Image (cartoon, rainbow, N blue to C red):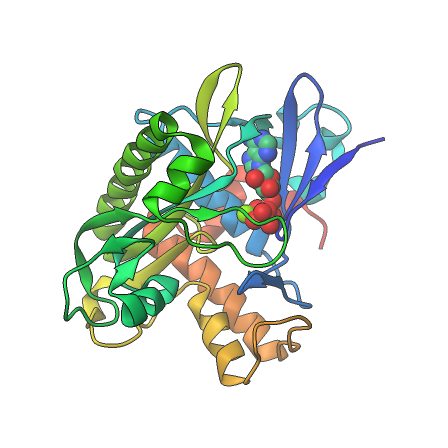
Length: 298
Ligand SMILES: Nc1ncnc2c1ncn2[C@@H]1O[C@H](COP(=O)(O)OP(=O)(O)O)[C@@H](O)[C@H]1O
Ligand SMILES: [Mg+2]
């Protein structure tokens, strides 16, 4: 039998033996750190497609945990499960560093909320007079705790150094900003701003690896560059759509979350696919074909 070693908000993690894991991106969606009741059809495959795209384009900067996403190369019994096509990755199991490594190039979300009240984001002093969604003078490293339940909490540089040690903090900061820059530059050539993004790192065999997911709509804020206008929230083709709907519903971000109407589920699924196509320039159907998804019986 296959052993479920962990169930994250979005991913199911199975032991794949030989020091490896099978990471399965489900269609679950979380917002404000709460898993919503309704799955978003196809979302897990979109997340996997994004991560594969970025793992390939950042490998020269840092090693990552990906072994393969080709189902036929998965160990048994995973190779025989058509449900896994295009949504699972065989990865090196790592000791995950308990810190979410966030890079911000723009002032949005919880960063904007902190700045508005303190003039700082995660203890980093920013120039006065910035408005919501403003581009920062330079990208900043704003790590948070990695809460197993509930909300991740912002860390100051000193707090982050206490958590992981000064040497590792410096290494993670530099890597995070370097990878963010690569992702932001690449996406911008497709007309997409990466306002902020989150990475996780871990150690495997003494080596530092980029793990988890990379540059997905779940871990990043994507904005269309052509209509970028600081001074308020930006239209986005990522998870912000669901967050905005939830906020408009009056939900207080504490469980239980409200149910999503079918049209919001469908629009969200379309936003995820559109985000992939905008950022990568590849039709999502082409990714599915490449992975052999059409074999999946509906
Ligand atoms: N290579 C890896 N080795 C061990 N754990 C990993 C690896 N890559 C990702 N993980 C962990 O697997 C889980 C993925 O599930 P996810 O749904 O993203 O969780 P979360 O609710 O914490 O966001 C996370 O806890 C993540 O830290
Ligand atoms: Mg996660």
